[in-house]
Image 1 (cartoon, rainbow, N blue to C red):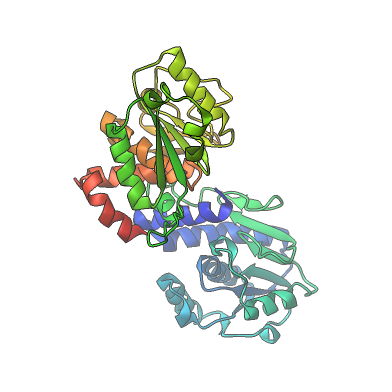
Image 2 (image 1 turned 90 degrees about the horizontal axis):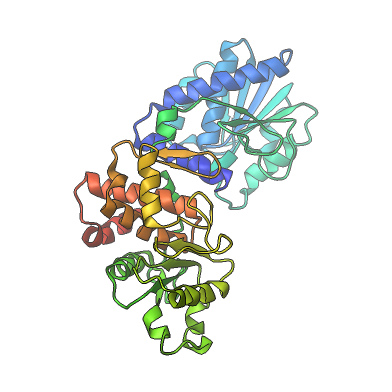
Length: 404
């Protein structure tokens, strides 16, 4: 996951858990200003260019905190505030206008050079579109100012600030970060943030936009396959299957090669047959897919570490029995390779049925998303359905329509 995704995930989870965002912004502003004053103590005239989103809202709270510290602050907003879809931004603008000079709907020529400039235009809330012209013109103008420039959270591409101050963790290689802004208990809780970040399927297209998943089973029409089929249909994933039993009679490459084309994720079913012939057939199939994500539900067959790695790695979830023990042994939390952990505070994910559903749904998501993101998105879905006493296979259609 990139820094943009992580920031949106944190924000959406904080909103979901009902965190007081005003207190969060105030807390982070104090930390920002401590760093700003420590590095630029003698700079008294400070300009802030702010967008209409969360990054711009940081700018407004920083302006307020700088004003409290005796600084002369002027804020420039290159749009009309009523265009913002952030109610807290509108409230803060109205409040701050009583004490600080704020100009909205401005152009590049309206931004005067201060002693220190703070850029809070877009940050990590920016989803990749081109910066619209007015903002681009402002950025071009201020990048030539003869004064230090501080970027908040993450600078817009196209210029190099003198300092970048990020929230929670550095968003660029040269950034410094303010920490302990968000409640750790909520950052570690499983919310809808990851689900909102996964690839959005296009079910009306003639061509799937959610990847291709290969399910390897011993026989056809297993219970796992039926669940995978139901989930795949709702997420617009192409599901193809290979039966090991059928390959006993026709083991030629031509009998299965078409099914391997374009595969993004392989799921090895939890069948009990584990003889050498079965294992060798699976080895042969996987050797044709060296860069494919592999999810192994079979605890009987052990594979070479280069083909399927352990649960913590980004390539594989591992087998279901090991996954169950892993969750229970760590008091119901996921621990990932990068050190991040997510808690299942109500212990919902330690039941056999929940684990199976989580792995199968995560498998479907992984056909077009990273494994880690897929696991956490699926975990939220399972927890949501269990808490609200919904039937996963029957009610997931309406749920996906609401989310996507």
